[in-house]
Length: 329
Image 1 (cartoon, one colour):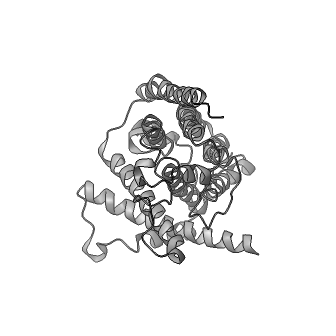
Image 2 (tube, helix red, strand yellow; image 1 turned 30 degrees about the vertical axis):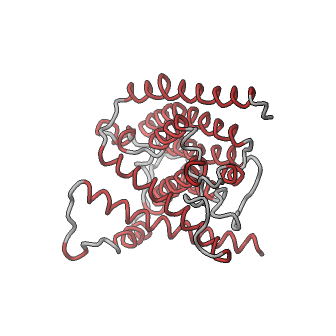
Image 3 (cartoon, helix red, strand yellow; image 1 turned 90 degrees about the vertical axis):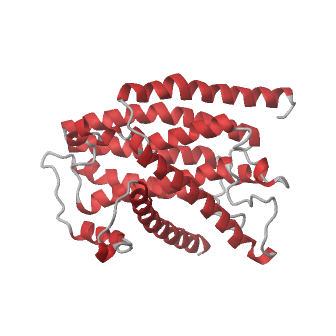
């Protein structure tokens, strides 16, 4: 019964956060690109509800020569994998849904599954979407590897592969100066850049460039199936941002080294700090999406294999050597 209640609460949190995230993304993008909304709905509060309703009642079209099982399974795989990844995030020290020991490895495995979903979507839809899916896999492999290497360096430094354990290792009287973004500045920067690539932000959004629009791996989807892909992308942004905060910015820990509210309100304060940090990271991701131009495919791969991967490996080896000579097992 307790597991069911935790599941329902987490689903409500995810749905609420996705709606808020969609609204904030539109507002922040409009702010930085100087776009004005119509006077009738200048706030845009009801736009997300209208979009969801439109997707529910929209005609469901599909390619005639599709592979039916894979075609219908791809959006469900995308959505379920990203939601499952969110379940591994420690929302506070008292509300931990899944506290498995290798939760870091499980999280990285789950956020890699959407790449498989994109490939299945392209493979089941036709020849042109398949080309876009293959490109998506080559891009994802180039950035998931340095991302995992950077996370492993933080895990070695903490001495645990548990997300909540890494958060607790950052707990000190120094507050934010004890968080891992300072000693792991290289891994933090590599992880953030790889996050932009994995989330298909504008700088790395090759799948929606003008010469690839006809071969997007999800352009053969419509209606509710397409909405599952979009929800999966929003939840992926939320999950990776929260994971990034947990690994490098102390998760739910207070930046002052101690909590301000009384003891019985500490869980609420921990939720507040995690939500605040997560949405600040999302804000910077949206800001970069609107400000930095797109990379070419060759530069895209060069950045991964020539810069990010060597930096992440150097960072990992430095942490291993420090722990070895310090006598830490």
